[in-house]
Image (cartoon, rainbow, N blue to C red):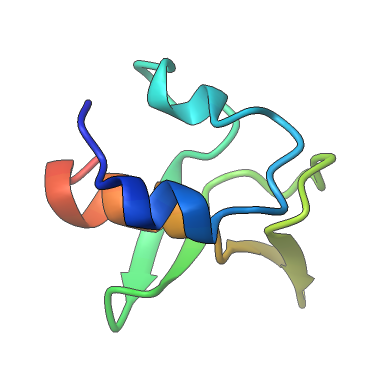
Length: 76
């Protein structure tokens, strides 16, 4: 996957070294739905050790710029 370098630079709180760019199936960050192309609701209810994942009620949301770009660009 190719993501613009400006987006990866914005993701400066990533403790996973942008491993999502290597992951094919997105087991841990599988998107259930997306709101306004900028808020990802994750399929998992489990809180991961990620600076961009937040609990929202019974859901987990992702605000990672790289993951959002992957979803918007590749629909995965």
